[in-house]
Every structure is written in C-alpha cells, then in structure tokens.
Amino acid sequence: MKHRIEFYQAALKPSQDPASITTLWRVSLAIVVLWGLVFAYSGFTRYQLEQQNNTLQATLMADTRNVDKLRETLALLTGRKDDTEHDRIEQNIRARQQLLSLLSQQNLVSYANTLNDLAHIPWQGVALKGLTLQGKQMVLRGEAAKASAVPAWILGFEQRSSLRGHGFGQLAISQQPEGGLSFSLYSAEVTP
Image (cartoon, rainbow, N blue to C red; front, side):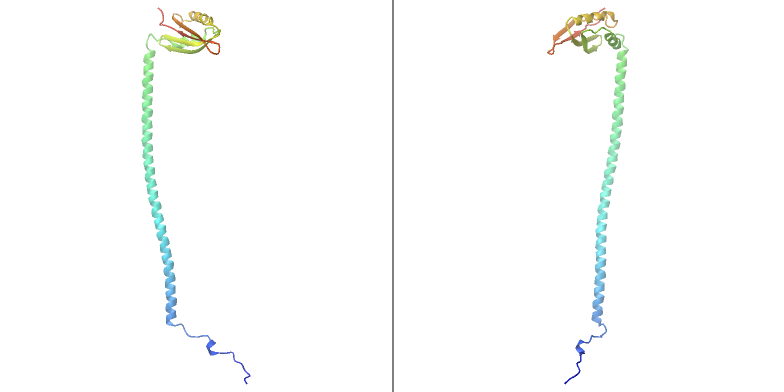
C-alpha cells in the first residue's frame, strides 16, 4: 500500500514556453487594428467637423450678403426719405409763397380783425358754433335760446369796424330736436 499521496501531476504543470511567433503576430495585429480604429475615428470626427465648419461658413457668407443688401436698401430708403423730405419742404415753400401772394392782395379781408370783433359782441342767448370765411363773404352758424336773440346779436355788428358794411341777406333758423334753435347767417359782398 501506498502511504504517500502525490498531488503533483505533470499535465497540470503550467507551461513555461516562450511566446511563439504566431502569438507575437496576433498581439501585434491587435495593436495595429486598435490604433487604426483610433485614427479612423479621429479622421471621421475631423471630417464631420470640417463639414459643419463649411456649412457654417456658407451660412455666414450668405448672411453677410443679406446684411450688405439690407444696408444698400437702407441707404436707398434714406436717400428717398431725404428726397421726399426735400420735396415736402419745397411744396411747403411754394404753399407759403402762394399764401404770401394772397395776403399781399389789396382787397383781402383781415380775418384776425373779424374774429376779434366777433369775440367782443355781446352774446346773450346766442352761441356761435361755426364760422366760414371765404374772401369777403362769411357764414356764421350757431344756436340761440330764442328766435329774437339772433337779430339783437346782429345789431351789435354795426359797432365793429370789420363787421360794419356786411350785408347779411339770408338768415335760416330751425328748431332742433332737443328744443333749441339753430341758425345760419349768410353775408353778401361788402356793400360800398
């Protein structure tokens, strides 16, 4: 009988063989493939970034062209505005010259005196609502508390120089729905 048990078996002994050439080739090939993948990924990423950069540059150039066009349009509009403003000023000058020539006519009635004289006439029972002056003719529109107040008001015209001599040939008085009276007084040319 055996008294001794051996646990050592030659088949279980680790191999101490040096690396073989095939193993060396396999490891080298794996390293080369890994580096190739790394370079391929970095190249693909660079390509994507270049494409994005080109797209952004094209967009920037298009936007720059649009900004330049907008600046040109703004310059044209500003020039047109200046031209329009210049035309408006010229029209204003022509209108003022026409008014000046109209004011220099000798037969022009002074509206300021007429308005001032109307303001100083007693207004008891009469409210003047409108005044139309056309040359030497005038139309007075207003409201009155009673029909006799309008002729009394007209009598006050003789005391004022700008109103004296006007012949008021037509007086229209009508009843308003609210109960008051409205009137329109039309003058003819100044009587000699």
